[in-house]
Structures are given as C-alpha cells and as structure tokens.
Image 1 (cartoon, helix red, strand yellow):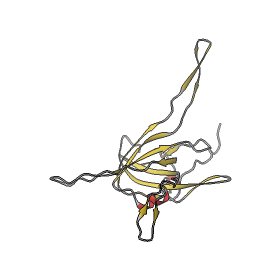
Image 2: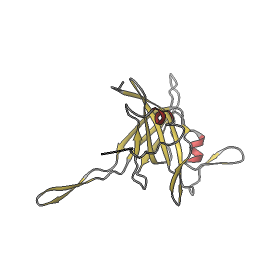
Image 3: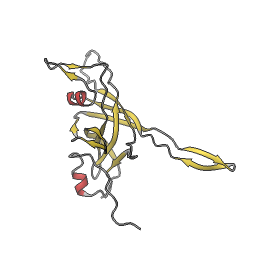
Image 4: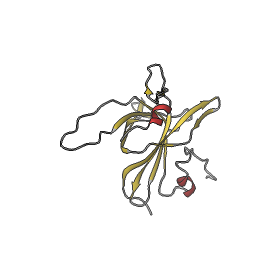
Length: 189
C-alpha cells in the first residue's frame, strides 16, 4: 500500500552530534513535542561548465537545506544540549555570548494516507530563536517559537534520509531509537 499524499508534521526529535578522531557519533534522539510546521529549502544549485560551445558538464552543488522549524515551545533540553544555554543554581536558563552551539540531527515524520513518512537531516545547526509575543485580545492565540535551521552535508556527503513505501519494517520501527545510517547494498549487478 503506497501513500498518495502527506500532511501533518509530528514526532520531531533531535540527536546531538559528537565528533571523534574516527568521524562522528549521534546521541540518542530526544523528543521535541509541539511541532507546528517545518519548511526546508534546498541550498545549492547545479552549475554548468561550458566547453566546445555547449554545456559540457554539470557540477552538482548540494549544500543541504535551509529553513525553519516552528514549534509550540522549544524544550529546555534543546536549549541546553544544542543552543548551549546553561542552568544556574536557581534553575534559570542563561544565554552566554561566548557559548558555541552544537550540531545535531533532526528526525521527524509526516502522516500519509497509508503510513508515516520518516525523515532525518544529518548535520543541522540552529540559530538562536527570536523572542516575541503579543497581548491577548478577544481570544487567546498560541504564539509558537521558530528555529532557523541549516542542514549541511556530513564529511562523508550524507545530507538526509527518508523512509519510502518499501522501507524495511525493522529500520522503520527503530527510526527514533537511534539515528538511521545507510546500510551497504547486498548483492548488485
């Protein structure tokens, strides 16, 4: 049974990236409840090389994605793990201009008419969110927070992965227990 449509972002998680001498590791995915929307646009376009009076070669220029994640309220764990805010003795979150943010993978899914479509963006960074609000008028309106995200290729070239109609059940079920990494193809031509 194949999906015909997708809708409704949900089940957003983040996983901290740590670098080692051998490469990188991902932490256990941490839930970020309250997803409202996500919009990520491709960064980088193919560039043409001209020779002999024609477009001789096209250079791929995949620099990942840029966009926004709108969420009801950014969890404190994301603020401390990724944005590197600290917690003082009174449990107050402190932002320090000398702190460097951490990179992370972001995992999420869209509902489909047959099954959910799960995604992972491997190497993300987030800008500090804006601080905004407005007064209540005749009715209360929830004012979500927005994270500006950049997703770039990992050193090995990985940008993102997503489940499809024929994704292995085991890989699909384990999507949020650890960050999915590609498995070598078995067999071949």
